[in-house]
Image 1 (tube, rainbow, N blue to C red):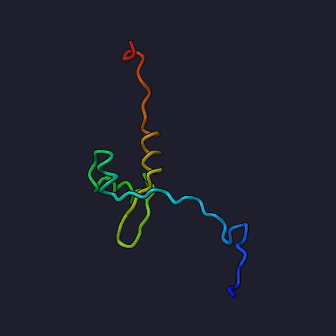
Image 2 (image 1 turned 120 degrees about the vertical axis):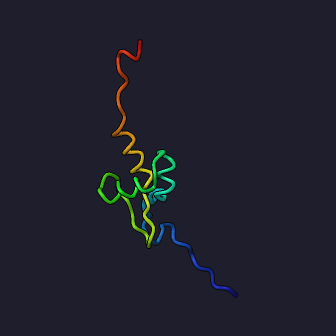
Image 3 (image 1 turned 90 degrees about the vertical axis):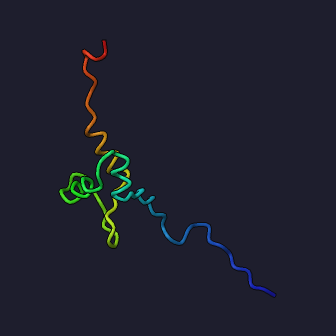
Length: 81
């Protein structure tokens, strides 16, 4: 006879929030049309948030989105007509 174990109805470990989508500085530069050196410089100066994983410098997609939203310029009235 095999012993049956009851599975718990609640998870044993609390759920963790989804980790951010991380991009290499090369991919982030490609997305923005910039050099990976520019992205690295922005990381080192704090213009965008970054993660150092081993020897790789990674940028979150959220950081890129925030940079783009902060850089958005409103449309000029003269251009609308």
